[in-house]
Length: 610
Ligand code: G6P
Image (cartoon, rainbow, N blue to C red; front, side, top):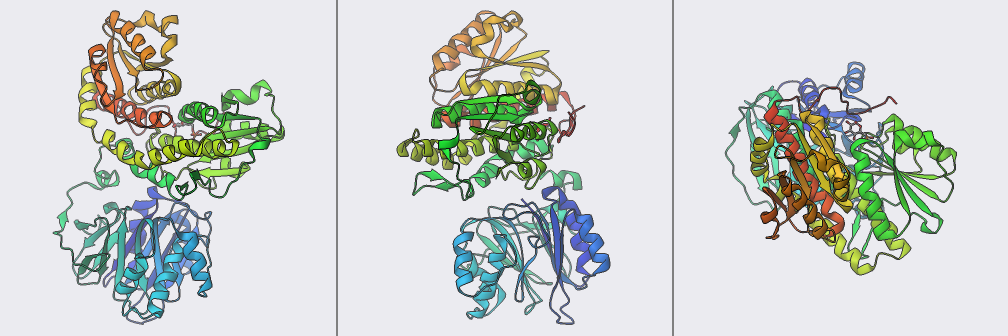
């Protein structure tokens, strides 16, 4: 997830680009850059870019100014290639400058073809490929930049928003969208493109939201929208009435709600390039684990990442039959853990900076274990410390309560489990094929749930005045019960407990009366009947039951006060769906109570203290 902006008009482009990038820095912040051209002088574009926050670029621009009235700017959140000056956008090939948000899935094949055709690459990014494709299309006879971009688009697969500029045609910007956001801003004798309205709101409120499979040619005086085949598309501009703050949240009331809704997209991004349907296998970005050397797996993590790790224990044991344990990073290293070269430690962390997790890794490495890190932030301390780094690509998460970072961790862990299971031979080709098919279908099923927020909001209002909540689940739903309770207490400040449903009778049952809402995770599966019995025990004591069940379960309504349904999926993937109602329920309860949802009291997004 990166931020992109383009300007074409009669004013100096650089200050407008930088103003826009400042608003986009929340989308990515590991490097930034601009490419600016002065059509009057006809000179080549000037690319200024550097690693680090936008302030570094601003500082560089004071030493090396970029003058001109046409330009593009980018703030990067690395996916392919570490954060560095060379990997920063814009990327140039001959006269072509390109910025990109998204992932080109077939980048390796295209890169090989372009190298054979004589292209010289100067970065590790997938984006640079597009600059070369456009340059080659022009050399091969495309009459103008728009046609060259169109011909290049026919070659790339994946998610993208591109903005392309040419030194030879400085009067146009060409942009295209597939899955990644893109908006066109209309001014008077000047126009804009950007990855979101926030970037251009200070300049114009008249915008056109681009749709999937559309491209646009932007000049000072107008815009021409077509599909990728060149058929004209017409659309009326919209006037944006959102405040700047609302716009940053994409029109959602809070970042957390925006991030909950981003999950189908985020999960699709985690899967990009990692599923190999022909081989019934997954690719861990080139990592090959030697299962003959792994005798035991130990997950270590904190907070929400710990809950993802608990699900991981189920997945790895079920698919790879390797003994697996889970430990809290803050406990692990203080008990002098028994570790050695046969152990693979899987460290899970959204921020990649949690000190307890980092110290646990150091302890594991000291004792000779191998470390596999799962992180959302590229080149953060934890993936850098580890032997293997695998990224979730969820995009920056602003809300303190983790949502999309969690579901993408579950995806990354599922991919790891499939990788191991295929190599130990305990996961059959057939089952792997079924699971991969289910993984691909998952984003749409997730969309189904996050879009059913109105029902959950109504439930949240009915129970939002309760003094406490209990969450119950069995098997891999137990960690989701813990996560549901954690989410609720983090943002609504209501006391909540997550319990293994079978343990209820050993304590929490004493809490149950007509005032206690009990959320029971009871999707179809081997523990279904047993969990229904627990649910009946709650009801027998007048507890209020909110059941999370599989669509088509006609029985559960008779045992529950409320039923929230999820689509059916493979047992292994159910936690990724059942957690979504947990997130929405806690969000709406907190919203009902009016708490500070994005920055709950006393909590921090990245915890670098012990
Ligand atoms: C903090 C965050 C949580 C997160 C935990 C572990 O408490 O607020 O959302 O789960 O740290 O962080 P990590 O970055 O290692 O996943």
